Image 1 (tube, rainbow, N blue to C red):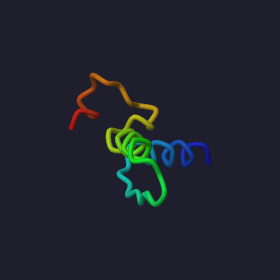
Image 2: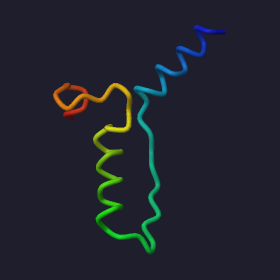
Image 3: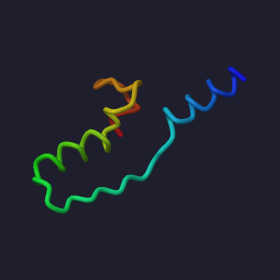
Image 4: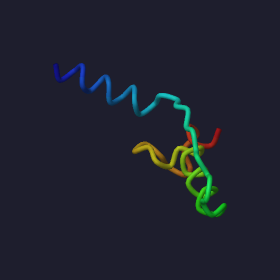
Length: 56
């Protein structure tokens, strides 16, 4: 069971995901900042600013 959990965590780390943002009544700056974090992958535990994976 432990290997299944580890495989699921690894898949979740590298998987691509779709995000739907509801920006109604939100300040544009905050929505832009949250969007950039998700698009660049900075929310993932493997993020490093100089890595090739994140600079696509």
